[in-house]
Length: 191
Image (cartoon, rainbow, N blue to C red):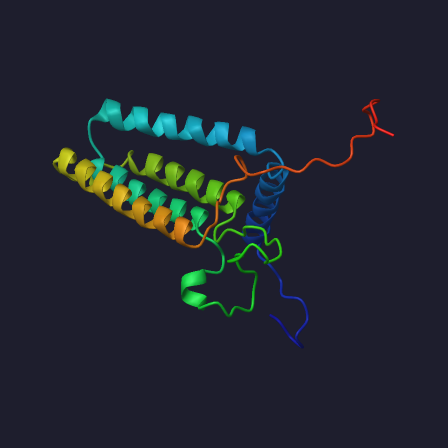
């Protein structure tokens, strides 16, 4: 009983669950600086899911739902934190530069890379587990779902790319101009 607002007594089950969560969070935090290995792991999980769906020749409605969810995650990953269209130019947070005279403002994603990776990996794991239950194997004509998803993907990406062009932002760091500092190791110097 919690008397006087002190510490509440946790049951042994709650203590074990909290300890398991702490261990899980510890290992998750250790993966933060290792994006290459994280994405390789996610690719392996995705490959195992795709092979399972291919072998079973079913669970297409799960794959369709997963595809829609992944498309939603991708849009969040490609979108800026503050939408310049919605803010109307006046924003409280960071915004994208609209003129060459504006100071440099870094691109801040609505969905950061780590959360994008984590959500995607979780989605593939949940979809993989769902393939073990026949209740989720709803008979559907999969080519229609595939065509509908492809059309949805292209329409969504066309809208996203036109938004990127209109507000002049690039959500990726490759292809951007890189500025090098003074090189102290170069021996040739014009005096």
